[in-house]
Image (cartoon, rainbow, N blue to C red):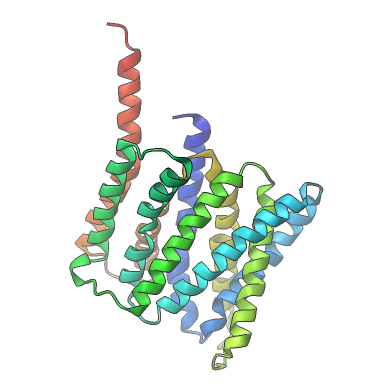
Length: 296
């Protein structure tokens, strides 16, 4: 595997860590009655954080980079909203497993669009990763409902997002595309909630809530979105989808650390299988390549 791809996959794992961190952060934010405005505040603040970097990279601003950034944001916006709505009707365990089905959609759509076959390594990783996710989600308790259907649509859209980013990620400035995505998400979430007119709660402001919002906006939105936009094109979309399945593993680690939630055996076993799905094919391929180069 080229060093560029190894670095990209390590950075994507770092982005996944940021997304995993966001679950306990949002759970803590709900204790302060931030409520349904959470996403609008988070993405609007993320855009403001990105604005100075965007200004420094303004020489790379073009209609092409702005257009692709807007398109990516318009794909991500309904995905985010479907996830948020779906969680009102289903459990986080169900949502986590169904959303992670993009591990299947990405290779299938990629093979269909590019008229290629799914490699045996990817098939092995898909199977092992799905087993790990099923164990984490306690699949035997999974009952499909309206919320699960919304999460399934969300998963399809995110698979499309990964593939669009894979195609155009290397062509334009990552900072410009990230800023445009966050602008679309911030404005889009604000408009959606203004139209929906959700009940207004009295927010219990404190320094802890400010720190939670800043951490979510800076790490889970700005930093993680930029990493994905910048580095995903340096690996394959199939591998990227596999790496993103580390999200529930990192979410559990931070929930245990910050919220003192118990870690079950299913998390340990399932998380280990997801890690194996990412690492084993790469190690096996390297060993096979080295063996092939060794003179007999």
